[in-house]
Length: 456
Ligand code: FAD
Image (cartoon, rainbow, N blue to C red; front, side, top):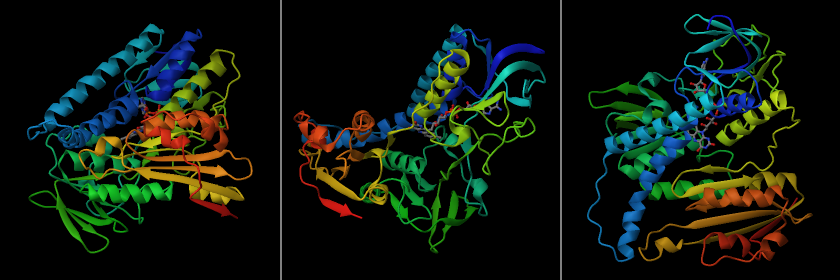
């Protein structure tokens, strides 16, 4: 492999890198991709996919309760953590194999090594070998930040480790208030851990619509997760039975495992980017323009390493557009309009467009439509689940500028609402759409009178 030549070397075989490498090779480029861990990247190996599998596992708790309401007799169910971990591992290994196979089929050379940038046209691998290339794509993603920097933080684990804990934690403290913290607290709480969340703000999920944040906090509390809001830990200490966390409000709690879900940082340390002329932001993100170009002419970057919208579908689109532009002769740019997102809490959150707070800042008049009801699945069992939906409508154009759903399958619903928002659908379009009965989603087209109207 010494001094081999390529048109493109991609560093990082995750969502963005794999797509870019495959598409570039299909356009006829000579492509190599370097991966230091496992092919598939964060999403497949220790992100979206295993996380969603664990979320699904945790939701059987409701299913057992609901089943009884529908006439089923269910014996006391028992949960087996090692069996779930093993089943998850089998599935992600299968997916990893498919990713590697697709790269091979496209003619991409997979180099299972850490790679760094030697200069704008040379990449060095961990085994000391080098390769020459016309173009380098940085797709190294991000890595967990272990925060806050308090005494004992080294006793905490990150989301990388939580998937494969050898023993199920009977007591868990999650530090953080972002979506990853919320999702893991929900999963472990429902699987049977005594679960605590400690964080700095008053409510989790900063940046999401306030009504959804409040409802989720209430639902999780009702579900048994203990919130220590405005009380981040100030110290962690090892004890003979686990870890003692001292919280900012003076409380102390002993747990088996502390998960620091306190954000992620672009994985650029030691990559050699700045020496090669590629500028980084203060937190290490590769600074790129709308066409993924860094400040070094031959170096490009896509995905989480650019720290813009850190989601898998975004990284994939960026990788695709990069390869189509450079090797397929297509003049394309990624459209970041109306990117939907979900929080796989239970109940789920699905959201697209502006929050109420953003909409009322941006538009002179905003009509807020909302509805709350009990999902049919919970009616016979009497479970206290609720669904909440909110549409935000610009008074001047009648356009729906935000849709927020809290409830079962909210992510599935919002994926489809996102199409309507991208097409600039008006509230009149929603109203004219026939309802599909009986569904939860029909409520999206049957909200008639606004709950409130803001006039700025
Ligand atoms: P990554 O997928 O992170 O891939 C980067 C790859 O580069 C990694 O495989 C890494 O090992 C490799 N690498 C790094 N440095 C080097 C080097 N020097 N040499 C060789 N290889 C290197 N997104 C969603 O859309 N939906 C979700 O539900 C969701 N859930 C998530 C849950 C968790 C717990 C986490 C952590 C993330 C989640 N995400 C989710 C985010 C999603 O995983 C990322 O947005 C996505 O993986 C970014 O893709 P990427 O290609 O930029 O980087």
